[in-house]
Length: 308
Ligand SMILES: *Cc1c(COP(=O)(O)O)cnc(C)c1O
Image 1 (tube, helix red, strand yellow):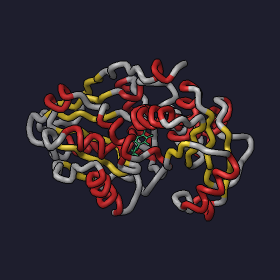
Image 2 (image 1 turned 180 degrees about the vertical axis):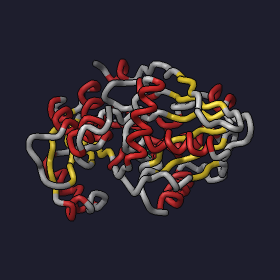
Image 3 (image 1 turned 45 degrees about the horizontal axis):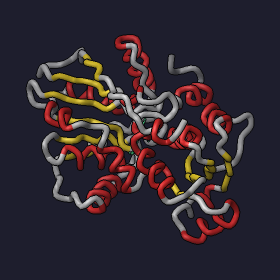
């Protein structure tokens, strides 16, 4: 498939939800960007779009990126590179474990070259010296940062929303990892709807991180956003029985799968905030299903078959 074909998006559909506890009668809709591509999961498709275009325009034939062993971004990059005709290399944090987990097995099957580095070396992923060593080893490559966040990724994330969507909702809610996707949603809404981010990891650095990205995008005047930090469930890829039960019940009720790392926590947060009357009466909320469903198989293998 050519890059041009790959970059033709289908408009995502919207699934209306019916929160069980809804004292203020708010409207909750789920924007299904999980369906834009089976492997280039949800927000990762939008974040990669202009990176691929830029890589091609600048004459690169290889993409190199970084990630953890279960990363949605790694598999998305592998699939996008394959479809758009790039060679792909990923630098994986930690030691190789065989057999490969489902994420890395699929990435390797798509032709991605996997290179494992120690956690200590992995921490140098932004250092020029380490990048130069990688260039000597692999030749020139277009570097996609860990998690895929950079300015062109944010420009791609803006396209998750249309003007019509921005005008139709009071709130847009999204899971936050690096904050790249959230930044794109914030710049696109441009103060017209409030953007609420649900960090899926612990720590208070993300607010500053999003502010820094807004400055980089020259949009620091957009202030109608907030991070709600009560729903990380103990940290990145941590979970509780309550979260797992929520994900399984949600799937049973709506036939919509959620992943345990990002969208499960985001959706749990939305339903809890609706029940706890955190939104004004009759407000309209658009939650973003950012995908990540490829991670369920690896999660179930690691922790027992928790997600049905
Ligand atoms: C990567 C990812 C996110 C977080 O995106 P950021 O731009 O890093 O904040 C959210 N949801 C899913 C499913 C993801 O894979």
